[in-house]
View 1 (cartoon, one colour):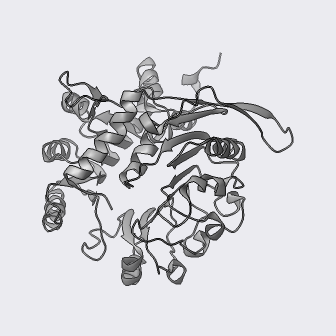
View 2 (cartoon, rainbow, N blue to C red):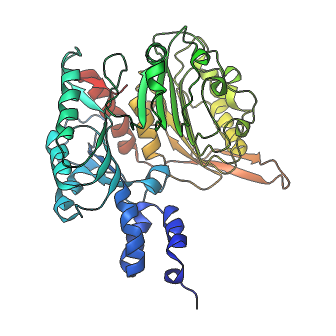
View 3 (spheres, rainbow, N blue to C red):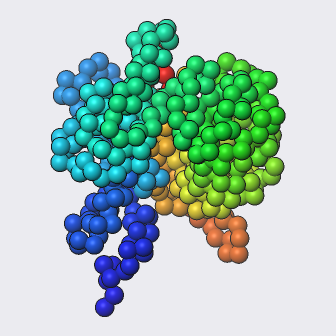
Length: 431
């Protein structure tokens, strides 16, 4: 009788590649062969986050010390690639973790020099160490370069060769520390000024770029084989970026694409069929912040005709949840038939870091279910909303779509308000 453990190691690796952290941990203890395959997967990519204190409506303090942790059962794009660990759990189990196991990418949300030092002292093989965000308590930026250089030099003394990826890598201020750096954050001006230097880098797979009025990215075509591309529109520039993405970037290798701002899709893409320019795209994050001159209420309507048959995760955010918005989201679900769809509230104060949060916290949902993540006064009760959509193709299958709330009201309030408070009380550096 054929069993899972009778499969060759190569086949088991492919099986575990499709599993999230929760199922990997459940299968690992069942057989030594499964443990042998599961262990490298769990250590390969690690994401460490700090739990958020729960914020309730009308409650100034959290006397019980309740915190919001990412669910262990969360199955999505992030959890399939990363072992997601809270900082308090890491502190309890770090001493028991295998210090010789190779870690390809360790991503730390926030900064805590004690945790950073413990991590770097414990593990002997970390390829990339990435800090997602750090906070300063002054509106001035003078100390930030010193902080980044300090951490970079600290990592330089580690016994193993670790590439540090800082949350702020403005190319005008900070050099490329390693020729094998794989992630870059920049803007259009610095892109042009450092074009020759950038093209000597061979291993860049992720690019996060801020575009402003007058940026003509097609004049400096990117030759990187990017897998992740994030384009953000400058919030203080009321303009429409007027360039085709495929003219500015090599798009055939892209697996993840994020657009943040007030983009006109008809100027970004050659056709409504996104699969022509993005054949390998798996995740599409569309944040419609309404920074431009168009009416934000109609932003979702502009995307109704676009489609992609292979995208697995479609993440949307908008300022409103009007009936016309819901109908547009349902239409998009039909145009992305293999995708799990999550719809978030886009705050009036745009925070770039919310892109990261939306991607980490969007659950994998079955077709016909839309994750609805609006809260409080921004939320309409749409859980009773129903709309039938027809999937094109040979079958023309008709499906009834409904919206479901995955997170509680307190959890959503915490996700949004914890960041707005941090942004106001401290200087947040993330681009």
